[in-house]
Amino acid sequence: MDIIRVLGVGIIGVICANLVKRDKPDFYLFIVTATGIIILLLILNSITEAITVFSSLIDESGIDSKLFSGILKIIGIGYLTEFSASLCTDYGVSSVANKLQLAGKVTIFLMAVPLITKLVEIIKLMI
Image (tube, rainbow, N blue to C red; front, top):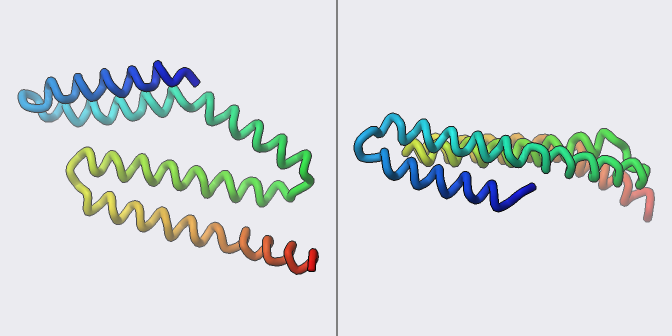
């Protein structure tokens, strides 16, 4: 990932958004949203590479791939929830952002229960 490019897009997006904020508030929200989406697209390749490396580590370790899949889903939910909540905050609707964060946390908790159960089973076998 070229962090300089990502940082540049972020800074340029913020500057552009602030330049039009007073005169064209509708464009402000569009620029903020577009900047966030562009940043996500720029880091998508790096995320894919990280998942590939993580997947090969899981294959080498012999851990059940369902556990790996669950962990990736939890990570993805966390990132998407944070991104969505940040957008809501940018739009000035922090109450919805808080509800999205709560929903994400509850979903992550529910998805973690089978993983924790499997971890307890593994620990029992070791003892």
